[in-house]
Image 1 (cartoon, rainbow, N blue to C red):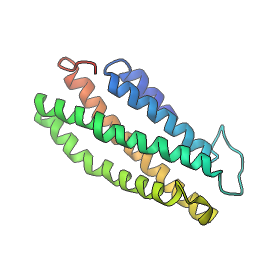
Image 2 (tube, rainbow, N blue to C red):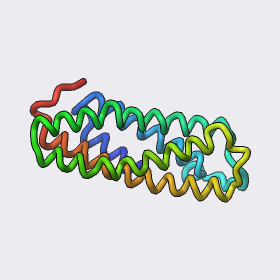
Image 3 (tube, one colour):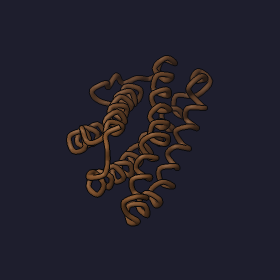
Image 4 (cartoon, rainbow, N blue to C red):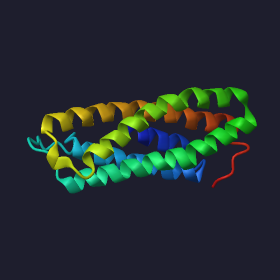
Length: 161
């Protein structure tokens, strides 16, 4: 996941301020996820649930990232695609439902764990965090398709925001 965001930043960085900010938020979300999941380089071989504060931080980053995507970046991409090409709009319309699946999963995870981690079992938390990580990975792929479409087909008419 982290390598993907670095590649995205190199490829599309500087093309649109909203995308730059969003990719930075994605990077922070991935780092927080890796810490929470005890993945390298944060591998702590944890046997208990992470601290509630760490879960809350991750959940807040995740909700902020989802919000930025839905209310800033997607809107911008869809409006640019609508103005500049029906093929791009069709792609955006086909990807949005796929992205929405991960939104639902992420919001459910937030509802379950942001304030109530101590009531959950470690095995359930790890399983649900893993499922969330897989969903986020797929989401990032779909989002990158949208960003790439905006970048390749619409940069002549895009203005930094």
